[in-house]
Image (cartoon, rainbow, N blue to C red; front, side, top):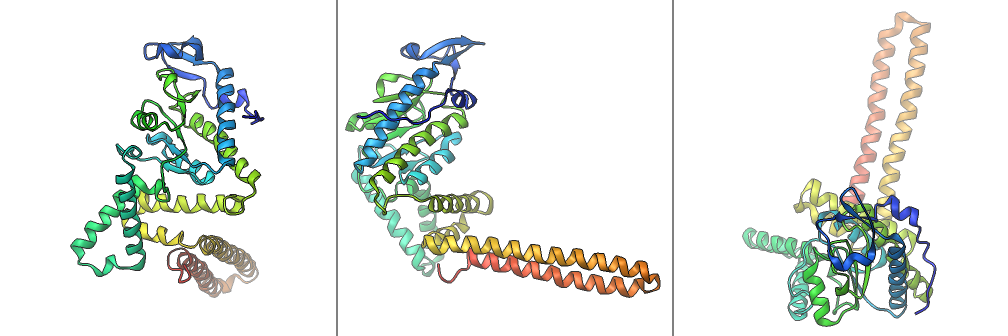
Length: 354
């Protein structure tokens, strides 16, 4: 396996807090070779070794991605969930970021049955069949679809056991790690000072609690995977910058619909990703509609207010007529902004072409 340069900077790693470990009372003696010092009751990880193992992990995923291998990223704790999802979407990998269901890999036949059920329910929802069922049955199936989306949404396109599994927290994802060991799947794992480095194929000593630390490690691994896909020059698997951007936008809209608006509005966001090109164009058009509808009336209102003040200064006796005309004009300008907002909402949530 050829070694490559991945621009791993020790200063950047220190800023992300990768070197901070757990308290000296909560540690695994097998991590002693990776600990450089103690400071105020916590262990300090040796960043030189972290950089070396991270570089080896990047080399491994680069070679595996060049051969078309499939990756699974696992990180279910709240701090890592968003970073795991974004990293996996960027690298076109599968991911689990909510809850690891026992037997997801070792009992793959059952998982495959659940995935098929998930796909069938999604198809029924998109075609409108669920709405034609009795309300009780439709509500039950929608709740089932919501649960499947939560736990299996990141692996809905996975057709078999992955070739390499990237684990964010060894302690939190111990069940997933044991399944990988049982099946002989190579693993890359972030290990803190309370972990066992002998359980994984490549252990990256790092702080597995800090969001910045997790994001930095995942970004390096994802960059290696994307570099391999570009090197292979397969147009079907090479992610472009625009595709990555729109994936982030659509993922953000989906998260907002679930956490801020409500899960019952989730189908809106699902409809948005049926056709990525139309969805991307809709997002751009919605932004332009709101922007132009705000800039134009803003400039017009400023000009009208300036002319009104000048007119009142010249003819104070006509102040009442000028003020009435000004307020009417401002109301019409505000209406243009509202029309732009309506157009943007229609493009996002009622687009007939999606």
